Image (cartoon, rainbow, N blue to C red; front, side):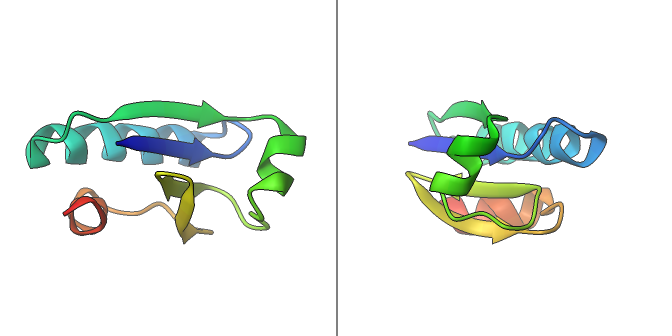
Length: 76
């Protein structure tokens, strides 16, 4: 499973990355976490509001920091 944290690297992006790492650990998922900070790639993914989170290439959350529980629900 691949989780992408999409955004410029702001504090909210870093918090979303930390929440995603914790959610994957708690859910027992073997997830690769990638941070996407390049504006061109962000636009290619169709993200207009950051931070955003994608699972296996599909954007699931955009414009807010998802909680650990919210992310676990997306992974399960």
